[in-house]
Length: 94
Image 1 (tube, rainbow, N blue to C red):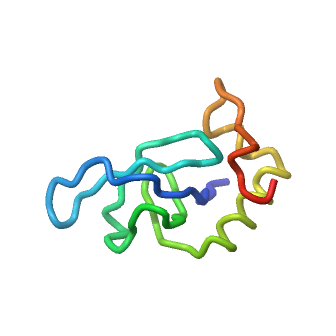
Image 2 (spheres, rainbow, N blue to C red):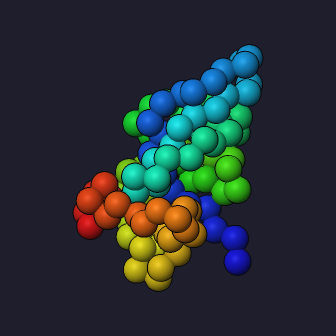
């Protein structure tokens, strides 16, 4: 099964033109580089739904945190970085 995981956009790390942008997204403390081309409106501090390294849409914080909580409960967050445990202190509401 494929899931889109919510994460918080920490910064824009590259912008090659008006369309192609990359950003650093935090998933409970695990930072990943994400393609932001499909979310041109995204800005640092926004929550995004990310699937296979591409941000699909901006979502509100409450929805993102609720989804993150459910993924944490079913043990799906460890797949983000199997060599590094998720820092649960960086997940609001944990």
